[in-house]
Length: 219
Image (cartoon, rainbow, N blue to C red; front, side, top):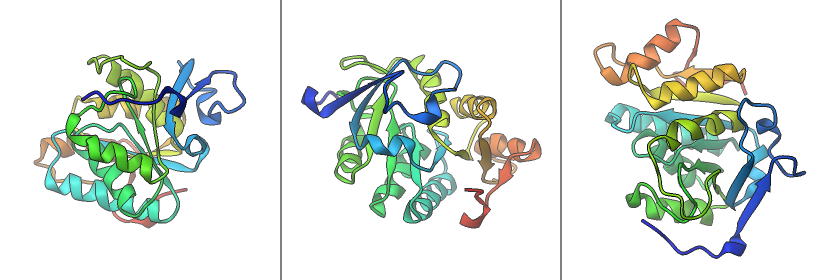
């Protein structure tokens, strides 16, 4: 879904600018340009990225919402990718408590993808959140944009919480970026018979910090 945006409401931040996010300055492949709608100050806030499956289970959706809600309630900014499933519920959890959240898009700011998130898009802005992208106005959401934008999600965060993840997924690409960037990786344990929990359970076996309550975060 395409929406009309006044260009004067979009801030452009270029690598080298004084207000370029500190946490993105030193990551591999840092974006040369960011387009920001909303509160650009959030780009330097203490934050946790919450990520996971698009085809999430009820267990996953409830946990994404719950942990986003509780973290946002404590002043932590929630970062995610605005996709269906876990991302959407992470943003919703933050918005529900009028907390801070950043949505990182894989398209231009004038395109709401998925289109059913139009109200969420508006709520993020109304609640003093931010929607950002490295893609100019008019650029459509191409498949290859999403793995690429994941380095920004992890790069802006102080840690990444994986709620659900299949064996091979975009979620695991974000985890790879987070590890390369030296970020803490957290994972919610899941049902060992569920495909959606394969990734999280493997991450815990490999050293990710298991999360069962809000006190498990090292922030």
